[in-house]
Image (cartoon, rainbow, N blue to C red; front, side, top):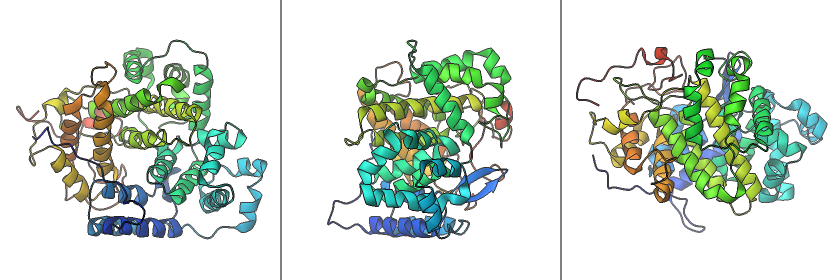
Amino acid sequence: MNLTFQPILRQPPPPGATNPAWDVVQELLQLNHDKFDVYFQSVHQVLMHNHLAHHALTLYSLGATAETIRSHFKGHEGYQKDKGAEDVFFVHTISNLGAFKRALGNPDQYHNFLELFRLRFKWDGYTDALNRLLFSGDEWSTEIFSRMVTGYIHPLIQTGFGLEFDLPFLVCEGLAMACTQNDEEVATAMLEIEERASGREDRLNLVEILDACAADKKLVDSLHQDMFHVIDSEGLLGTSKVDVIEHASRFTVLESEIQLKSAELCNSTSYLMAGAQRLGKEPRADFFLLHTTNCSILVDSIVQKDWIGRQGKARLLSWFGRYSIMLYIAMGCPKLDLSVVRTYKPRKGPGGWADAIERGLNYKDDGHGCKIIRALIHAQDVSRPYENRPEFRVKQDDFVKAATAVAESWSLEDPVGRAGHDRKEAWIRFAGFDRAWDDVPSLEPGEG
């Protein structure tokens, strides 16, 4: 395995320059924006998200050709849902704060919230409007900000891609998604965590809190596995809310440590995904935990924006870390052990970054796989200056080893289509529970 090759993520061309792959990305993202909803269905009231934009941008970033990007888009547009036309009167109505609050949490109103934010960006300017809507701390922004981590952080992911690639219409999609997610209990719990964190002096690094969660026998014994009630009153927030608040509220980012803590979150969420393995079993990525890894590069891109204030950046990083803790607990507090990926020997190819990237570009899922590879590349880069700090547990060679191990769990024969527990796919769910590993093949002696 080549451990010396260092990939560089591709950026959009400068103004005035052209790039065939970027031209296709812009075309497809506009088509997606104009035609499709951000949700394509609901299963037991769990909303299923449209990943077309994430997928296209990630493929581009990893160096895909225009043809590859278009092929993946075509493979996944067939099951999307049309978003419909906005209701001008309703859009005007929710311009009032009271009506806005009453309309929150209704996925059927996505297209109207989208139009509301498009108009706000048009009237106030993109950066001023976003600062006011997300980071000002007023009633509007409190409602929107607290919902960015609902829907397994998909609103934050959507918004983050828009900010990283400077695509305001994609940011509008993320804000509208936040307002229409139906799992508001997550937002309420996160506000309670923030209140508990205020004034606490016993802060810990993220990995130290994960250790404390795993060592909390009362907490671990209270956890159970329910695919459709993961973080709600019938799931984690019903059985363990007090403990979740107590643990998660120990993570707070100060305005003086934004760069360090953003890098720490990239490293620690890589640790979450890469470390949640099972000795003696083939490596797998937990489908829920991987979203924190995939989101980390986007959060880091947001806090690099010089037009966002330090207070807003620190709050965003604090919330992202706290949500990652909450999700880790919901997955059963899996033991985090990097030895599985560190000792894994490639079986399907040469391993290394080039091989993992190629597998990501060719894998027919809805984009979760290639996003892992991109996030790990970025996490390796931003972790480098902090290699010797103990809270940075994923070391430089670990990133490519993790990418290799996870990429080899994907099969090019897997069917094209959405992710889902009812689908044939490479992911596991609830990595801390024994049942999650029942169908994962064992490693033969000498394989890892």
